[in-house]
Length: 411
Image 1 (cartoon, rainbow, N blue to C red):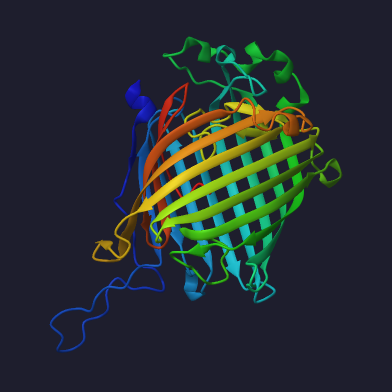
Image 2 (tube, rainbow, N blue to C red):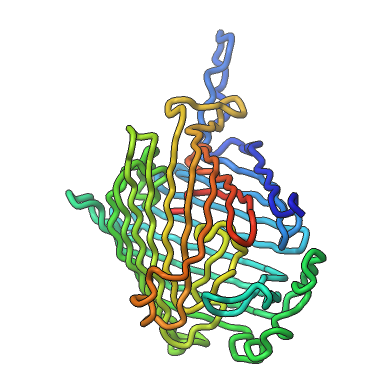
């Protein structure tokens, strides 16, 4: 069981091929005795293997293209995975720079997610482990978005994102059998029949419009250019955003509700540019007729990293994270595949996560510093050209120990 809970093998066998913009090797000229040095590719792929109590063994692949078809700032990403217990997902993302304006950018995202069994403990910050059961979903989503970034000022860079979201969710009972915990055989229909028989368990169509306003003062160790918002490895500064989305039956959605979130990330250099303290805070408020699968939830991912996903669910939530990042060998690059791909800037990290959920948003002010769930842990990170951050993390809580791998920084 310890192996199933903990083993993640990240394939640092980087799978790459020649892009349309960079050739693997220049042609040998007449009279030359050796070819020129190969150029670095504008894309890279990372295969990986993993295992876990919900998924069994799984395999995945992620590939990122930079400056696709020779246009600076045009990016495309493709990712997919499949597991022993039939979890599967894939996603495609396209970013088009200088759209309608020198400061504008368009993006388009498509995603598919199929989870035959998801652990469920009930709604609320004090949901109990003895209520454990399982449910499933199949979800499709499409999101076009337009981003406008004003020119940098003495106060930082201001930006605006406007989006439309289309999501289809089909929930049902789960079917995964966990022999280590017979309670997990129970389905959500058995343990929470009222929820199962509610409208929330009908196939659900969600349509939303929304916007995000942000201010970014961060400096990047690996600046990208091309009108991109992305910061690969921040050295110092802050990132603040306020986001609002309206889900409305008048737009064709099956539920109507409002979602507001506020997020703040502070990056504080401690020693030169390699020892960095990062503080992150997040608030999410949902008002209206919110389906349970769209409520704020914590566990796994970038929130409470030593709990199962969806461990705590309710309408509203607050989150606090602290990371101490220590980088090494800032000028060293390890070439792979004859230099087509490079590994650089290995780093270690210590982290602390706290989060909780609330049913009524009025309770947030009164209970802001009470009844938090927490995790702590450590990890190892490095950067794969072109600018993919690989994370491997070990996390601990009062319920379990996890080991996870992913691409990109948590915040």
